[in-house]
Amino acid sequence: MSDEEPPSAARSDENTEPAASTPTDPEPPSNRAAKRELALELLAHLEDDELGLSAVIDRIETVTTSPSLTREILDSAEKRGLIDRDGARIRTSAGGSFVRFESDIVAREGDFECRRCGAGLSTGHFIRFEAGELGPFGSSCIRKVVGRER
Ligand SMILES: [Zn+2]
Image (cartoon, rainbow, N blue to C red; front, side, top):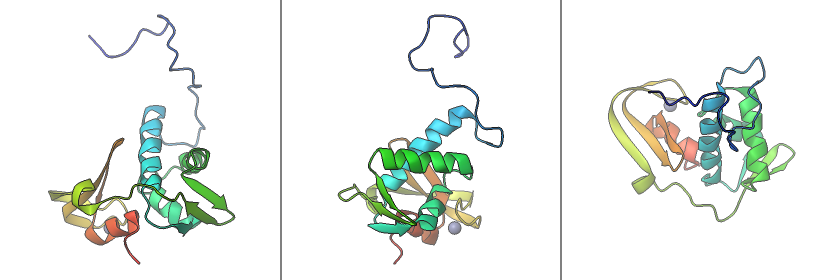
């Protein structure tokens, strides 16, 4: 009657990662993978060709505030060829599919708190990714997150 698998049943090929995570890390392992995928999708959709490392981290921080997960996301993004690190500059891959405001951003009425700046919102904007939704953001913060603000 539960979704939990018995611990010593047939070995799964999936769960071979070590269960232990760094002691300072607030993210449970199950959230880590989901958040990593969400952040990687966000990085894959950035409109800027080149960003400072701090600007990239600013975006990753909308997904997680864990420094170790942020490093993991940057490493994964580099391995997957989504970004190219050149010192403090980050080049994003050309030809990525950008977030289209019309179809990929949904607005919902409600009582929200902006994920980026913490401001109270009556309309929350969410970016829809295959890995899930990221948000809510205020109308100006979401432009910064997806790189529309020049
Ligand atoms: Zn905001």
